[in-house]
Image (cartoon, rainbow, N blue to C red; front, side):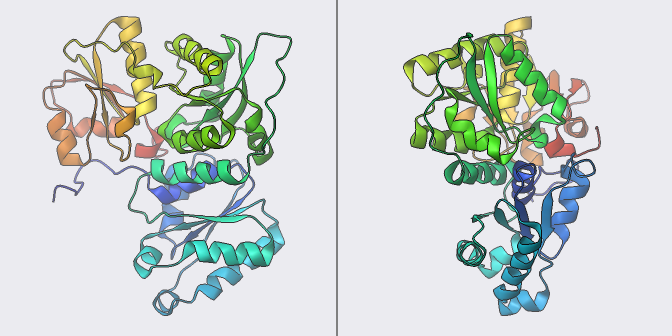
Length: 369
């Protein structure tokens, strides 16, 4: 029962992560599922659903097709829709049922791409992982297949540098205005944002990402793409979210990465206070880690981050901890005096603690927006 949740919700699943990452890029994302994954995604996880169009489809997998392994119907439906809508690419995302059936998504993607001529790829989701996994692999595929191998742009007469923001989705950052605030924080230090992966920019803009001098991983979602762009085009990357308190430190790290042409450790893990913890933050490790570092720098209060997401061990500091499950989180919060987290965490926090609300779309959905 340690993996059950009685009070708090779970984080957005990997399938929704794929849809969120690819939403604005002009492709067609297909969830292979009876219908449940799509209804959860569009009613809870996607802030842009009512304001901006995107080709998000559900396959409508039936029981007989699942049992008999009728992949041809799945392929035909996708090809029929693609011929009418002309997407720039097709992305296939799995759910628990095709995962249990052993559906061969890479083979299906190959068949669709061969028969339609439209770039097609699959993301190995199964509904059992969190959004960081699904969105991360989706952006990784975009980096592998669509970024063009172009020479770095010549230095402009101005002193501005160029940077890509990797890992920008509403699941971590909410509405577009929050992304614009991050860009403005960097612009104060002479940085020009070439592309945002993937809010506010289209696929053509992302294809020109190879022209940027450096990449900035602003959430765990962007780390996989950063590694691909480093290995393929030798674009160095820095990890950190440029909030107003940490933007200057991140700017210096970006300049160092450009000068030395090497990747950088997470900026928010440098010079952290070693005193007894006064403030506990819960959430995605890069955004909350950057906020924690900013609090220490600006207010001088020691902090720690509790990360409830998988595959994030490399993004946390010595005092921080990956905590999976409601029971483990409730135990870890015992004794915490000041807590910064999504409002839905409050019921499992100590009654005598001071709680500061910071909504996280990947946890509480659209409730607080």
